[in-house]
Image: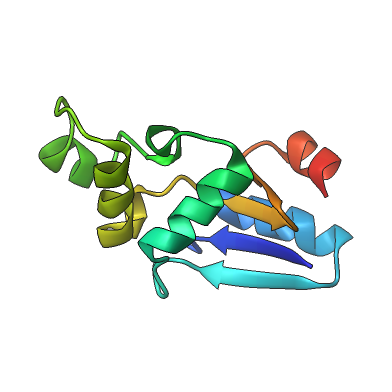
Length: 113
């Protein structure tokens, strides 16, 4: 099964979902703004993505700029910020088993799935 962390208001996320839907039948769509991931969920995502917490943050979001930019934050503090403000999580995220990618580039998604 393919899972997609999806934000319907994001063009890249909509494009990724359409791309995956054309190729895969068994998909779970996770609207992460409606059902925010817990800190534990984010830690698992980071492991599957093989990324550091800051690499999953949308650093141009106003919430990040106003509250976190130019501060020295621990990985745990960054994860907590994403759990409290899921809009900060980079999107879309495509998950297959114990691996995941940020699905912004269709060619990478095609290779991944």
